Amino acid sequence: MLTSSLEADWWRQAVVYQIYPRSFADANGDGIGDLKGITSRVDYLSELGVDAVWLSPFYPSALKDGGYDVADYRNVDPRIGTLDDFDEMMAALNKAGIKVIVDIVPNHTSNDHEWFKEALAAGKGSAARERYIFMDGKGPNKDQPPTDWESVFGGPAWSPSGQNDGQWYYHWFDSSQPDFNWNNEDVKADFLKTFRFWGDRGVSGFRIDVAHGCAKDMSGELPSYKELAEMTAKKLSNGNADLIHPIYDRDEVQDIYKTWRKIFNEYSPPLIAVAECWVAADRKHLYASPDTLGQAFSFDILLDQFDAAAYRKTIDFQLEGLKESGSSSTWVLSNHDVIRHATRYSLDMPVAESSDLQAHIPIYNMHLASGFTQPKTDPARGLRCARAATMMILGLPGSTYLYQGEELGLPEVANIPAAERQDPNFFRTEGRIIGRDGCRVPLPWNEKGIHHGFGEGKEPHLPMPEWWGKHAVDTALDRPDSTLNLYRRAMALRKDLQCGEALEWLDSPAEVLHYRRPNGWEVVLNAGESDYIIPEGRTVVLSSGVAVTDRVPPETTVWLTPSPSV
Ligand code: GLC
Image (cartoon, rainbow, N blue to C red; front, side, top):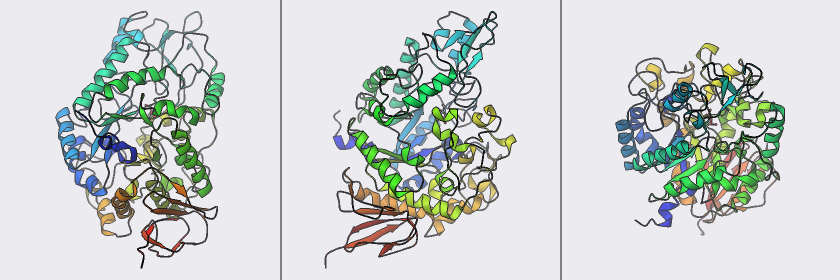
């Protein structure tokens, strides 16, 4: 069947809403969000006006890393539902015109995956061990790890096989997440099967976890951790495209994605894929090419402060970088790995502090404990800036990825007791990094009532603070100036705005961003301290702050249309 280019390009300027299933809606009352919960909230998503949802992992998992430790790629965690529930959810979402993207975690499995259990049992030198990265330990008794490398979450990156055979397995993340050996044919074939499995169930595409990491070469002499961290830092900066790293952003990772692309293109419209890749800007096009994954996340704007000049530089850089692949941009301010932007913009501290872990994945460091648990915050400013920044990115060409709860203006929950924390990042750094639980607290649907409408049974799997209800969906719907109503209005208007992918900057003071889209619509963000007077001939159709007609107050974004001529 032929697909029109319009249908095939649906993703280029889509609004994709990320659902973290365990924290969205709990229909069966076990304290964990589930697929039936999502199905029960399809109207909410439809009224919000999103084009697609991306579901973080809902597969069977011991939840050592919030589901990113997958025990079975082609099934649903029984606490979250069944494959029938998945089909029912898909049908309900599709009926409402909402597409579904699922998360694929190809870099590692859970240690509960049957292949890993088989690998441990089969012993050294077996074909089963070849699917993972096992190496002999160092020292006469092989009781020292093969290298001194640290994992992204802190602590050693190697763990003993536990079989008294002198072997260790590599895990870039938690010890419960052994890395695959992507030179192995079983691994390659199994993922093709997984893509077909979900493709045949009707998903529209995939978000690819840690896409920069699958290809590794551990065969030669391996560098020390210090050398590795230095190589990673270089690899993450432009102009080092030729640097070969043993585990990071290796060229041959694209060969894997080229084989996936062939499968994606068997579907009509072709399945999409978006890479979570932490790579230098001059490498991103490799992941976003139409021959490989097709689109790649950019987290650059998320790392910016609320600053017009910084935003403009990032936007220009991002749009320029896309020319090579022809892909469209992705704009992201929040996700399940970072401090929610309503809080980030309220922090009176630099969000990313320096440490050696930063060389791996800078965003995780946003959760450094220092300063964050007792931050100097100005929540009202945080929310004002968050609303303004979101309205600014929603006007840009490209697709916007929203994270559940940001439409409620939810802040990060900073003070989760240690005993209730779940993130391995917290445990593996002995609390030095407080981890990502604060952005994963279940959604408040109702101001009052049991668990704020998240579920009616057991306590939610992460505790809701006592002030959670004031951010609930029901009260937000009643308040015309709520963040939820702002998002809904913006999304409805945006359908007109996304008519082409060009962007033209208009003259403005340094602390103001002012751009125009091909249909004549304009977006103005004021990050300065005084009002910006709107030039003549425009009508305000949306304001992220108070209602205005002729000016843009500080920390506000407005959308403008050309005024009808009189
Ligand atoms: C990605 C995910 C993160 C997870 C990690 C390991 O960065 O977004 O949540 O912990 O991969 O799978």
